[in-house]
Length: 281
Ligand SMILES: [Zn+2]
Image (cartoon, rainbow, N blue to C red):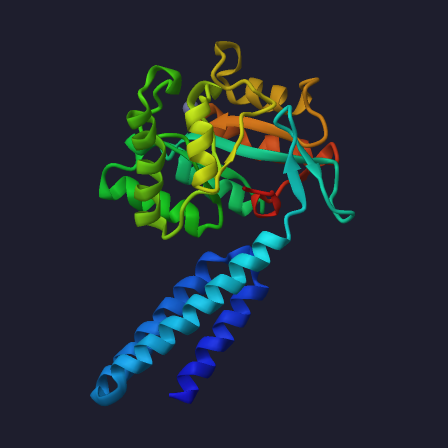
């Protein structure tokens, strides 16, 4: 039993250090817990007690990890939807990549491209893209690749047109569904068309999600629906500034341009902002 406990502790410690791969250690901890439970059930006498202790241990570790994350935000959202450093280590010249209306046809491919470039991003998810087991599996994979998952509502409806109950279903209902798939609730919220309501802002806050629109984006504009055009404007727009919050979508031309967008931003000296460092409510 001590060996198993030691193993779990090792894995948790490794997990705490490897902050870039939070998904994997969690899985390993779960596996280790399962192994432990199997062993515990062999000696029936104190299996209940052991299980409670292991649960306590896991809860404690989870709490510590969450607290560590909470106390270390380095950036905050400003009034114009851009990001600014709040600690001296923060780099002002950052840009955040966000992919909305995911995971549709290109979301997973986009996540793989970004992963190969070591470029962090938030994928803002809609409920109608995670209805089937295949779609849910895509979301899970994107999360497992290390990307933050944001809430973009269940059906992409305009929130001001909805009743409170409908808005609740769109936002909290989707968080429940995302949690069932990836094991955690989103920390970021983006309203469809950027149309927030007082009630949706209240719900997001209650859910611990940071509400964000964006500073610029172009891929829904006909003029920019080619790989070349979108790659150029995303990097060379006059709107690119420190803390920029880039809106992109799960679209073919954007997927094809990602590589050039990431390298273009880096060539201009921008660091891509890791969503884990953003302060959330
Ligand atoms: Zn959208």
